[in-house]
Length: 359
Image (tube, rainbow, N blue to C red; front, side, top):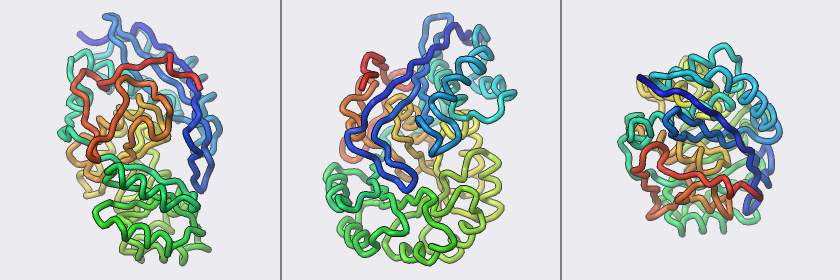
């Protein structure tokens, strides 16, 4: 008994963002992605999304490299295979080095397929318990409209607002804006924009009132993160530094952070992510689910991940219209009262309309 992988197909999509998304690393105006459809011998469909960017500014993977690896390397490893568990996908992909975002896109589609095979929502299939996921929005590092963006997010009942920061960010402006909303959690995200020369500038952010500061230094700057954790009362959270289970082990050993961001695309999919969740759980490390300026397929998988009992910090979960005039999923994701209600349908709980893939 099991699920036989009958067909695997890929469709590239390309959409403009409603407004530019600015970080210390890049300004994103348009988004490419690849939607993966895996079909079983019984006709069930599972969906995944490749979250690599068009150019290698975030990781070494790109949409182009993932398209090649998925079609030419990974697809033949699964096609016509019968699987008794979705965990077997990670084993099948073991001979392929790296390429985690390509692996994750296909693997996530298979997990969706298995949940549909079992006729349960994906969030239940993985052992989730939270049915209403707190929504969290990201405010880009454009300080001309920072206060307006925070006010808009607050008016939509988001329970968490993440602000992109740089060493040049106006600390007084941030403190004033945050102090107006004592009931909202504020995260800061530096995307590795600080270094040893701007370390003292980072310390100034300690009194603003942030719940955490995400990835202040470069992904390999483990010692600087350890030093910041020792000197600051604001918890340090690692994002780009964490690519694998072993990176989390290293972080714990070096006491480099208190919290991590879970990103299935960077980890290689559900299998590795669930291992990391268990490691964090057993070591008292906080977790929350990060976004990738993604479309609804990836966000639906992430919402399922956020249902797990140990994930209590609000993640990067905005409604479908936050980035796009029109998302690919049906129905679109909506934030009501600061939360997103999980779907009860089998699998990711959303239909996928690839006719909405144009700009």
